[in-house]
Length: 112
Image (cartoon, rainbow, N blue to C red):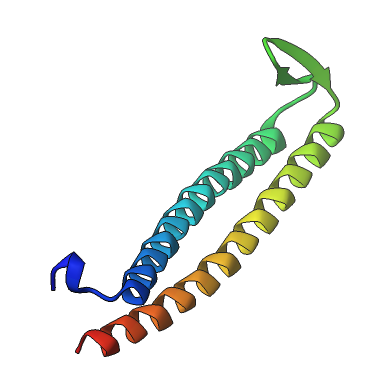
């Protein structure tokens, strides 16, 4: 079908489907960032378990001495935050996938 012969409402549905796909790509990219953060924090926690005092945290361009307990608490909070964000993105991603699937079925049905 040529674009000129596609009804306006169908063009809008196809545009909406493209927007949903773009949102899915954004969610996937954001989720990947937080999953990398989770891995980095887990690795830091493992290294912290092996480390002997003093331990240091990089803040900007300087190292600041921290107690292992304090640093562990900060890392665990950061990991919890990343876990929550990944779960939230997964829920949004799933909801958007369902919307896209329903819209795709609707568009396919109309085009047949």
